[in-house]
Structures are given as structure tokens and as C-alpha cells.
Image 1 (tube, rainbow, N blue to C red):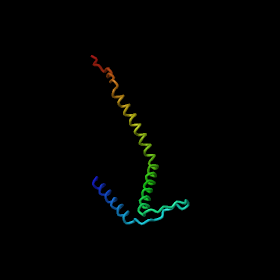
Image 2: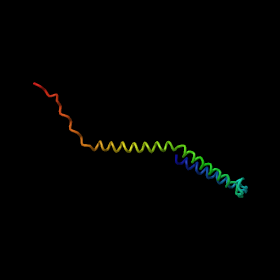
Image 3: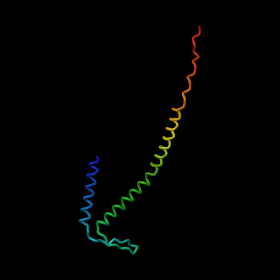
Image 4: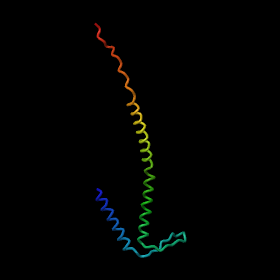
Length: 106
């Protein structure tokens, strides 16, 4: 499994290098309402767009999974509390068994 992860990582790296070499031409990047304009290589615009998309997706997942994280924290606290109670019960001295009243009459 680790080999497959490295193989994918190397393939993505090679594709990134090929993308950068093939798209070196300058493009004008501007934010229309603002008077900002930059001449950047096309690969920089593409990679920056992918990076921003990844950040937005990660942020959306983090917000969506907030309920799951909160539930996990509650369950961890509950499990710790129950383990503490269990240790306390196990450490209590055992009570003597009650004497049997079913003696033989005779």
C-alpha cells in the first residue's frame, strides 16, 4: 500500500513538472474590479487555482465534520469517566459473603 502511495505521488509530481514545462507562456492575471494585474506563467495560475480549490475543499470538510469531532470528544470523555469508575469499583475491598441461614436442623 505504501508503494502504491509513493507511485501515485511520483506520477503526480511528474505530471506537475510536465504541466509547468508545457505552459510557460505568460498570461495576465487580473482581479477585475480591482486595479491589480499580474503577468504570470500559465502553470503558476493553474497550480495556484488547484491549491486554492484544495484549501476551500478542506475547509468545507472541516466545517462539515464538526459534529463528528464533537461526538468523538464526548465519547472519549464518557469512556474515560467509565474507566475511572471501573478502576474505583475494582479497587474497592470485597464485601464478605453473607452467612448462610440454611443450616441443617436435626
